[in-house]
Length: 468
Image 1: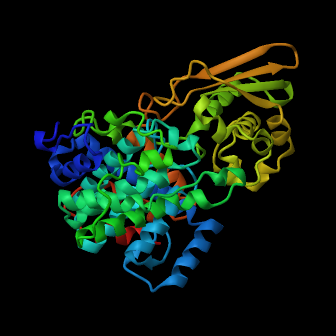
Image 2: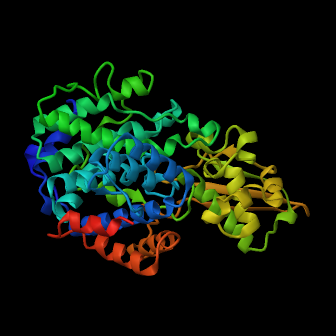
Image 3: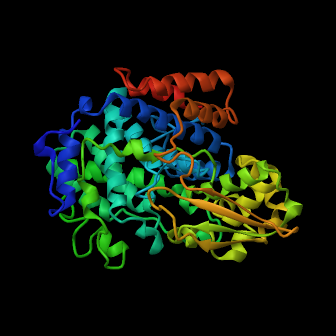
């Protein structure tokens, strides 16, 4: 369904104005039912990851830090018996949703939208007493904005050392929170201008497996809430946050500007980007998935580690710096997060163990001598036929000790828009993740609450089920 003509905007004008009008004027019933149902499943996926993340040291240290800064609030920390203020909860829940790098990815924008937008709308909806249906509407609109902004860069934020989820997510969060706060289009435009100064997310974590990336979505969520709150009170934000001389694209892309400005407006209100957002079947960077599945396919054909003399993966050129270099680090990752961004290690782990789950990035796998020895044999080459960024392809070529060469190609990674996980598969993934941290009864209660969000139910009621 197309939104009304007065919501449309030209790609020649400052995009903040068009996105503001779209978010203010798009009625909830203009979002198709299938999109709204899928939205609840994306939120469920994020909630399951958040629950599983709560077991880890990074989660408890972050929560302790936030509790040390202020008093308890009314917004639940997903899966944990704590409540924080609206901003702190958005920060904490964003970290939890992204903590295992298992959350959804918009392939064209190379951004994890739900991990920032959902925590932002959860906090904002509780603050204003919104209904679940209001939350779902704001969530879909926030995802729509964030993914389109990111897609206009065509993957180039990574080239310049920036993580799009942190850099771009704050704009989607500002718009989504602003929708719930009742901002006018003028105020929503100003909120995006404020958000520009909150955009942040360095890729330096790739060098040592540091925890920084985990907190990027939460920082975007709380920044978006603050930007929306300031704009509602008349705070004057930058008028050209995207197209300005020092706007988002020229500043973060070394003066290059937008690669495809039309991504902001093409079929806005009819081509819903949530439906082009991939749910991860593997707990690792999305750039690695096709290579891992290729490894699993060759192992299923009888290839064992001792048969392999050497191998290489054909990889889309834009992702090499993220998952292939420097090779010495990637072949011997320092920790689980480092491993999630290593094609050599993940391919080796899949070939040795015949699966790639959270267990394959635990300490015993990271120190497994068979996996590490095989990782030393895995290199990469540029894939000249890659469809990136429409899909994240991968092809594994193995040279065996008997002289044979075997290969398997995954042109379209599982979970991509052309190979989406079903809603049923998403539910199963949620259960698998959530039950690592909670009882079966608790998991069922959370599942029922989240899948029932899109109605007249008060968000506060749903929130009670999310807390530990």
